[in-house]
Image (cartoon, rainbow, N blue to C red; front, side, top):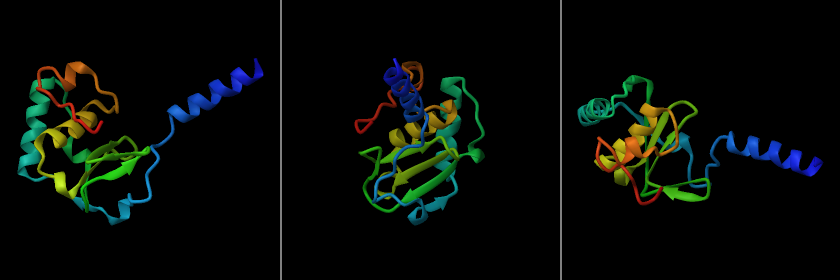
Length: 131
């Protein structure tokens, strides 16, 4: 019983911890960028089709040099970080509408989950192969 309790406590801590950032990821090397007109338009369109409303200025966008970066042992082209409401995009993908909208949807919903209603529903297919 004691082992089960320790495991459950460990699992609760593990599920609520910050993501593990790999050695090639260093936010200090990323360039903070302001959302351009295209990002503002995509955000507005996501709000309209999802029925969710959020403050785009509350989201910090970062451009990280490269093609991808590691988070939790997997390589990503973009990632929404709940801590600080940050969207980090690899430079090679900053103009990829589906990827940017995918990360924006996470920011709108304030969750790393992928509810079908929002990721394959009224806003189209926002699923991404590297997630």
